[in-house]
Image (cartoon, rainbow, N blue to C red; front, side, top):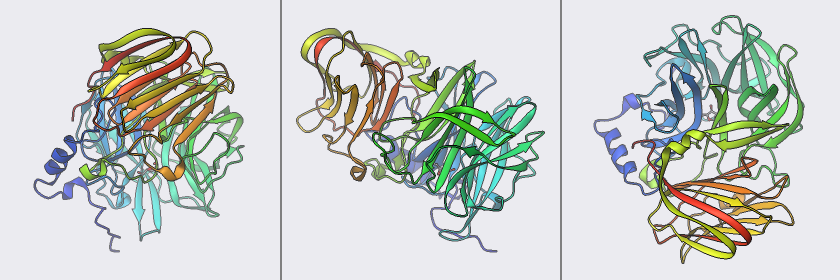
Length: 488
Ligand code: FRU
């Protein structure tokens, strides 16, 4: 059978002479390339994949299409770090050249088995513009970082009865001496689900059935399931497509949910105690978590869907979020920037106390910085970032409503305006701190030691920029530069 072909289904092995070098040179000079967020040298990045702490290093893989800022043939790119702050780039980890992955090596997770890191992924196969099949596959990384595809791929051929070709994103974990694989799936009736496989050896898999998750939010597809325990509580994360906005929640084209509850894997059920939207910002999707030294860390894709960005013209798009540590508070997950980010702390920019009124802090020329604010007493607060004559990004705290509102409508480059330019969250207690981390074209905003996080892509103009703080009570602020963590 001839392969379904479109020009975007080309691997890096098909590059013409000098083509990749030209892409790299063009992307490298873009003014919005991050300096410490993991991003592609060129082409499009999407989901984090295969996250692991393995043999003394953090390994982060991500979905990557080399040839431009759009979704095409997906590879797995690879970076690693000894300290979770400074990353090295490696050769492409998975290049989809086999028939069982003819239209991309899609997302998946990793698991250490013996001295090797098993990288589970989905081989995406298309038969036409719409018709597709999915195979679950394995690549294996040894202690020296060499990666090979498993010789008996695919591990799971095609999809079980009752589901469409949209079955993908394996998450594998061990429980009670067995291995389990969760997969995002779409039922034949076009609703989303999670299905489960079991294996005695992490290689041979049997279909068990569908996981019952008592959440009333079907959508048409559930992507990227993740499961883990924090402090004895089970958490399930997944990224449903096709759910409607509800109050402050789910305002992006696709959204991510976490549920706290109890997993009975053999009983095929996840009993939900509570569920919440994971990130309240504009650009967040398909996160994955992993365990490192007893800490639960998470990366998300700081992007969602198919968005047009001002960086497209320079042939690169998207980055990952910073690594976040997940801390349990009852049925909630707090998300905090990983402590390792302190290793990137650069010189101090400003430090001071503001006792009601406004302060304007000059950040002209600073593209990578972190601002920590301590709020001593409950106060209304307004914070304007990237302030120039032409633009600003506003964060407002409304004390009476306990609401934080982020507003990017004042920016010149507003992406996805059809989904609205504000996002908000109601806090459980008054605002007491803010941690804002800015890296060229991304701002991550953490509130009250991680009670809420907003991931926002921003494309500020290259002009004099101020950070303006207005408050009616005492606040303390500390701003420093952030150093480079990843090379171009
Ligand atoms: C989520 C997703 C996954 C899929 C991957 C393909 O963003 O659609 O479900 O594996 O991206 O790049």
